[in-house]
Image 1 (cartoon, rainbow, N blue to C red):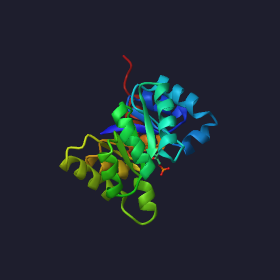
Image 2 (image 1 turned 135 degrees about the vertical axis):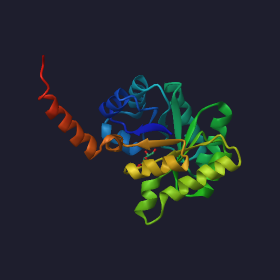
Image 3 (image 1 turned 120 degrees about the vertical axis):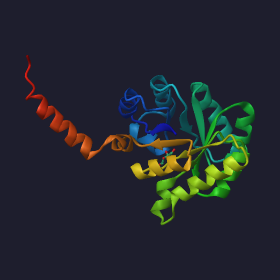
Image 4 (image 1 turned 45 degrees about the vertical axis):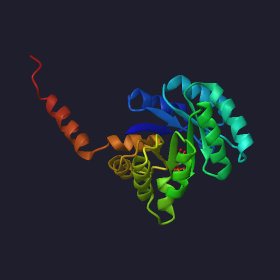
Length: 215
Ligand code: E4P
């Protein structure tokens, strides 16, 4: 499974990249707003740090506007993936983007029917929002499994990008289900590394090392 970082924070992105575990980045308007920077300049800075797909979201909700904005975003860097909301106007734009060779991440996917149509329109990635489905008493991982199976059944090239990941169990389960990508907040990337036995084992080794004669 590829790992993307779901963040607009350049320090978080740099740190995760230094660990060698980041294949790409996803942003959304809420994450960009937190940085206080204009969208285009932030995306440009992220592209300088990460050599992989960088999702940048359009704000328009009509096909014409989505196409205009998406083409501008795509001009920023060859790695930019245009993030489009999963609405009828968005799907129309995704079809055109796919004909133009512009990569897309269709976001806010909450059902298999939505995900099927996004794939048929030629989406590069579809993002099921696991955590937000769990928040309303559903099972977001079920949707990940359904999309992986549907795309596999019909040889769609669309990749399932497991999003709205809140904790390590979401990551493990999404990987077991065959999600192509998981986009993780920085905090979850750090959580994946933590284990109390690693911490206590290292503490013991370092304490015992002090008893080793130097010569
Ligand atoms: C994905 O592309 C979204 O930016 C993100 O995963 C949303 O996560 P949230 O539900 O925790 O805001």
